[in-house]
Image: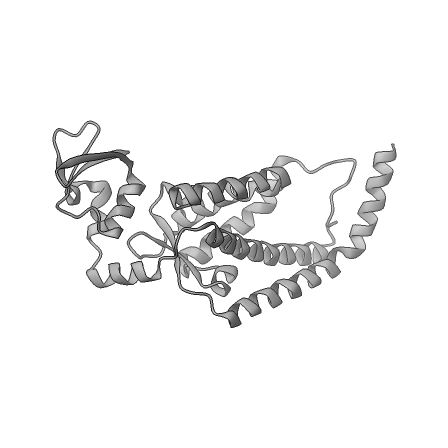
Length: 256
């Protein structure tokens, strides 16, 4: 939805609803600011618009705290967020490999029978569910906790389970490209550009969600990279034996 508003006696706009909400948090648009949107009968105060009035129901202390905690929407922050997500993904992959090993299921697919799209979705579904459950109950995942990030609504509340699940699914499609290498790289680069231009990645741009947090202590950053290295080494040890067999089978399949 697009809005126009009156500032210093002049009409400003059009602005998307997420841009207006950002202006409300910055103090540029106040509850008494006159706004208009398509199909509205007349100009009304911003607080009278159902889509915006939630922004004015937060106490002044909560608003001040949210502004203090909100991280600047920079490409560097996005790499920090992607770092947290890749850490979570590495944890999930490790848990998945352990489960496959215990169940006697091959880790790598048959080179002569590539995995179907439904199989890929089936492998990603558990991580979407786990992430959604953590974000809705705690506001963080292991990676976000280590990098001092938290997902919240614009009113400073935790996401509902449904909101968290949908957000997680959107991230895996729009940001991680369902783990397809080419689409993944495009997703990362495009969202870095969107953050620089619009102030939020695609999955938060048109929603009521934001990532909040504070500065990152050096000690926690050291722990993060140590944990990444330890997880990566453990993961490599788990998959190395089958990786060799898969490489040989792949070369044989290519030869045929």
